[in-house]
Amino acid sequence: MPVRRGGTRVRDTALVVGASRDIGAAIAHRLASDGLHVVLVGRSKPGLDETAATIPDAETVVADIATADGVHAILDAAERTEPAVVVAVARTRDPWARLPKLDPSALGTAVQDHLAYLVALTGVVLPAQRTARFGRWIFVSSTVTRMGGPGQAAYTAHKLAMEGLARTLALEEGRNGITSNVVSPGFIDTAGTRANYPAEMFAAISAMNTVGRAGTPEEVAHLVAALADRRAGFVTGSTVLVGGGVELAWPAGLAARDPALAVAFATGGPRPVPEGSATA
Image (cartoon, rainbow, N blue to C red; front, side, top):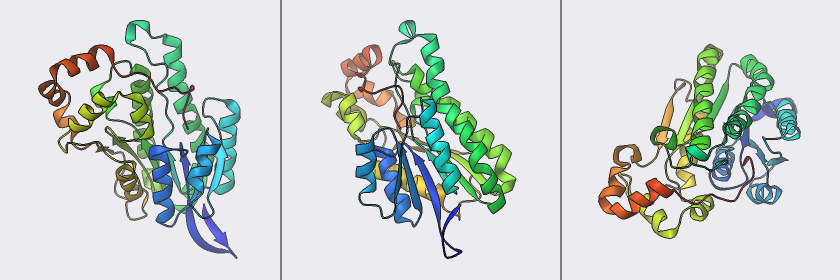
């Protein structure tokens, strides 16, 4: 579990799945700055290399959670490094479709891709964490699971399923010194959201929470780091929102500010980000 030199424990290892950009990259940088050795997992080698470029000793694993080879690569890395901290950021918004046009089998595939590798990871990682009497599992979800989103049934379904898995893990492993929590970001200013939303809609959604702006990846990473800390052992089974109070204002804030834009969002939704079956 810890990185050792000459038989002496130096630091814990964090496995960050979905570290090639945006929130995942910010989490990797923050955990590294807090002294953890980080193992970065993602589909994009250029993205992983960019994340790792300023993190001393970072390891990278190119893997797609939607493929058998990708899952095996993640499990091999976990078995080798014995991470004390596991952070799951990987996600997809595919298939992006409103419910009447949604392929039921595609929905099942999206949920399967995002749970199967996590269940497999528990079998590899938990034995060492139990022996050490310490482990931190942090699952990055979304406030969309509370509010819904046009065309985002698959995304909402797999994030909700992941939240249920996180709470079950908390129940099963709490007495072994292992915690499991969910971090639920709201609207975050990332390259993905910039590409996904037209400028006018991006600005409107950014402003409709109680803080009045979009969040930053670093703000999400700060909460993840707090939950990963060895001093956070009494927080488990929780879902913590990082949304600027969006749950207090959505969707009334947008409707009051710009009724026409609110209707456009509710009936059409944002355009999809070009991406594959799963982003890691």
